[in-house]
Amino acid sequence: MKLLKILPLVFAAVVAVGGLAWAEFRFPMPEFESGYEYPEMHTPFPGRTNDLWDVVLLAAALGLAAWFVLKRRSRPAVLGLTICSLAYFGFWREGCVCPVGSIQNVTEGILGLEVVPVAVLCFFLLPLIFALFFGRVFCAAVCPLGALQEVVAVRPVVLPRAVDRVLGLVPYLYLGLTILAVATGSGYLICQYDPFVGFFRLGASLNMFLAGGVLLVTGLFIGRPYCRFLCPYGVLLGWMSRFSKWHASITPRECIQCRLCEDACPYGAINVPTPDKAPLTAKEGARKLGVMLALAPLIVALGGLTGLLSHTMLARIHPTVQLAQRIAGEEAGLYEGMTIESEAFRAGAQTREELYAEAHAVRADFKWKSALFGAFLGLVVAVMLAGLSMAGRRDDYETDRQACVSCTRCFPYCPVEKDDVAVAEQKT
Image 1 (cartoon, helix red, strand yellow):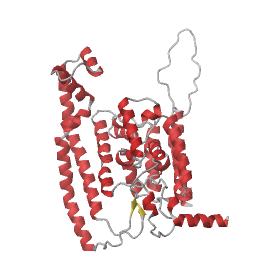
Image 2: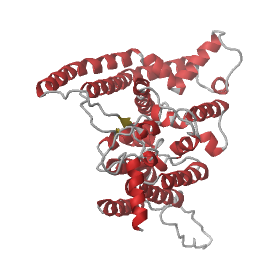
Image 3: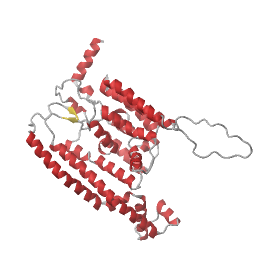
Image 4: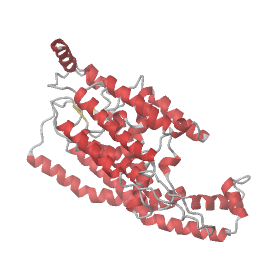
């Protein structure tokens, strides 16, 4: 009943926020001296109907996903919503507005570089709010990127836990690079390197088509490779889901440890029992925590130093630095011919010396920002090591709240789930 009370409140909040966007004239009305009276204009409310309609549909889809996962515990219903989300948010709306890409807009807003549109802000916040209450239901059946990978995951295998952990650090790297690129004016990396937008829009560069194709082929055997090992928004969703009030559970009642759910989950999101592991005493726990707290500043400092030393390499993501290096290479005879960018530069009024000076200023701007980027990655590593060292004993199979995408793949395999369904059918 609590779940039923929360969903209408969240939906009403979205509609209320959407009502803040008013339409206005983009240009001043012309003045006429012939006595002509400008007709009364009836502007639509709100301004961008499609975007606000998308916000309403996003909220509704998130609500349905939470209902299907937590209340109905239905894999067919979740899969049906997944296909609908892929059709609308993916192919019909061509993957835009995208909560994943909205990270860049929100970063610009936080830094005071741009004003974040209401619809984009809603797309950024809504999945996070739902994750805080219900887990990663956005990943379960609403995200078009995840939906595309979910429908092709026909023979997924479980990766070794160590490999999964190491590859799981890549999304933090991507998130840090995304924020660094926005902070330095280097562009929108997520939009530039979206591997699936070419399929949604039926048009992209050959390299991006190949990248998307490789990920989809990989997704046949490794479940959701982009979601698990690349998606920067998944990092934020994982943080929220870790502290979610409600979350998908493997079994509706007590676990009988049949191990069927472990084999059914291709995403490494099920924590297995550790009955032989002795629980830590208070003294042992305090000692391990003290060691990690002592090492954390050192790890963060090493990360910051690594970022600082790498600032020249990181600055290459900036278009000005790329152009300066290209022009310098052409002048040195390292390249044959010219690119569109270098040809446009040579046809302009800017001199090479001015371009090199501008690129030098960009590299200088990258110094301390790259150091912060490295410190962020160091903090991520320190927290991960602390979590591994403090892991306690576990008696039952449990979902990893941060990694679980609430796909409900494990539900049909649970014999306790089947017994409950059989009992319910007998009663009806």
